[in-house]
Image (cartoon, rainbow, N blue to C red; front, top):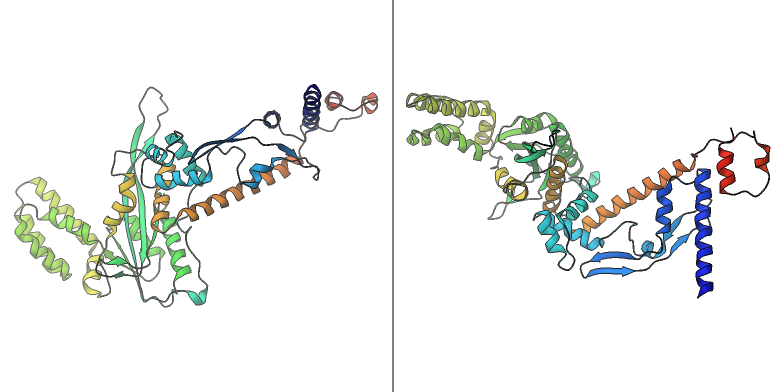
Length: 437
């Protein structure tokens, strides 16, 4: 037993001495890696669906490279990362459940044996990163592109609370509203339930609307034969960011969302509901004269300033979106817009229907995660995204290591002390030599 302990001690000390030598020579970056090496005989604990799994592993050094690499072979074989605490299957379950439930509830549902915190769930979503809205796409070749005469785009937004931290620690954090945009492209409705045909969703927090529309345009150009398309109908509530799509995407024709139009019709006729049918008649026929006369009659019946203000607001909204009203009435190929319902299902049910407060990055990630699900993303697709992220991380680490290898902690010593060229070379001598200039 004494021989075994002595052998281990000698090997361990020799290993540390070698590392210290490399540290002085500038081949190693800092003391952190030394600490990591000294912990190489510690047990590894991995949390899985079945509970905690503990195992021992051996730290191996590669002798085939000029710059010695260290690794745990058992971790490499099973694809376990250096600082990984959770099994990847459990990580993916956390992310999947966080699409529907709060971070803490997702943690409780995913791991019933080992308690996990909401921070763990958030960390795994952060690890996944910003999901591309087109992560589930399968790009087609030019000869495979779809040929449709009419394409439909619908757009709306969800207002969420964004938490802003104050510089003054004594004050409470304040929140502000932020718009999460939702756009989806489809080929029309089908079946008794008017299901959208081949729908594709896009979402996130975009400070520049043009960036969102560029994504949508890129998708349409990749999937559809643009030359074959006659008209792309863009439906929405008239918001400026939606109308930006008319400039960014060719062949578009604007259609006003009937849900929002109805809201303003009710606003204008609240004090005289009998005039509502006349207003709708003019709108459905795109009869501007009839609409104008109806508004005149409604205004005359207003009893106070509040009613007059509501009429004015509704009238301005309808007049500013008249092109969208005309297109809906006169083009037989237009269809209704269900953007309000889709915002409720895709975004609001998770992000704003409850009193939640998000960071801007967190809201953007969650919106994209929700869209990933509604675009047909499954656990296998999440796994591929994780693998891609890990591959990028490994490439980055290798690149940084190659760059760091060219650097040294100390400049080349000038030969001002000839005695340093004689005798046994050790870490202490190298340290002194590095100062000899």
